[in-house]
Amino acid sequence: MADKDYTSWMDDQTLEQIQTKIAFLERASAELSDVVFGLHKEIQVLEAKLKALTDRLTGAQSDEVQRPPDQERPPHY
Image 1: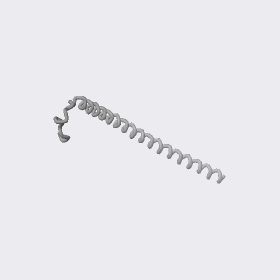
Image 2 (image 1 turned 180 degrees about the vertical axis):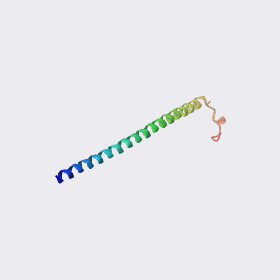
Image 3 (image 1 turned 135 degrees about the vertical axis):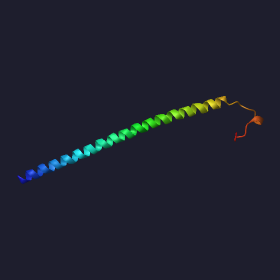
Image 4 (image 1 turned 120 degrees about the vertical axis):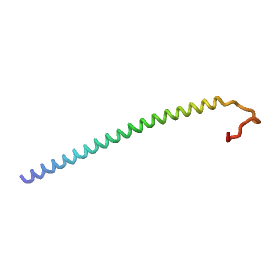
């Protein structure tokens, strides 16, 4: 009977350890999911800013008038 009690105790202890690990992993998974979602939103904002800057730069380059070499502005302008 003592062997059965020990085995039952080990099973209960093992089950409790497994449940504890599962709870920890579920919490870690939820936290990581929140981090990934936040990073996704940040990436979307950065992509929108990059597109706006790219469009602005493209527009500025297309508005630029070609000047003859003697009328070219120095690089610091």
